[in-house]
View 1 (cartoon, one colour):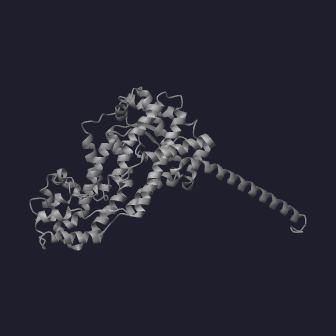
View 2: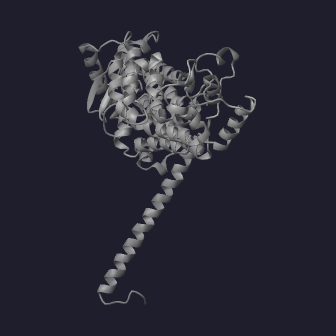
Length: 459
């Protein structure tokens, strides 16, 4: 895992980057204690910092652990010069593509359409419309990070923080808001549909394409624009069918992220040892009025969370679920496109390369929870769904979504064809069980009739 949640991580040991702003300061505390002294009220200190002087009004945020006002402003400001509004022609084209996609999908899956309305969003509209979904996903994680960070600081360190200790929570909200805003701005510049990050981010029933990004994606593919649009509409419509008619799926994905958040812990003893070492390196003394000393203390990598076994399990479950969703979409779209879409094979391969090189889904979960989706998992999941349909039919394939316990586990994906083969044995056992139950029911009915005629049930 190359990224960790909200900028946590080991101090940067690259000498060329270590001295850059934030290069060895995982929590951004250095900005609070930079040159200029640590005296004055919190408001006066913030007023001396150019960034926070402009954002001082956002310090009154009380809506949760992430300052979503700042996140929204940061994302939109980053898109201001590059975004284009959608045209009527683009909206019409998206509507027609999603309508045709649903017609094709009706022939390869019994799951009904999940698209109630087709919408074409600009990049800015994508940011604004997906904010509620991001809040639901990210707030619990950020809240746990803030709580762990605060509780792990020894009392001595809190005293050293002086007048800023009372606004740590609001500072955390600003830091998280700024980071989430940057991530959303980057995603908005390349995301193609409403479900590409692995979760439906649009309001329920909305099938979404982002025409400006779709056009950029199509450049250089040597395929007609209408064909590329239809391919992406098939993927969007297939994803929405799954999330609309598998009621537990969205919650399971959220629960996996939140299970990771619940496991966030920071080694207090390690912090205390680091504090002693830091004070020892200062000749046995520590001057809390010295901003350079405070910066050295808080920027020395003491507040690094350790990943627990429970978190590793949550990440594994999340990775597996995302792979199963993506693999099912791949298999269903392949079945629906078939010979109808001449460029399907090339487009599907382009999407696989996009994921392997770190597309929006990979970026999103790497930023949130340090998870890197492995393309091997996606290929194995697609193998399961394709083999299930080929051997047992699409109805049996989709039946596995009726309960989470029926889905392949991470271990099952290690040998996907073995999992598929076992489904046939399970079907035979279910059939034998059903026949035995029917036979027992008939025997009970016969016994009941004999008893009603006055005969003893035992002779």
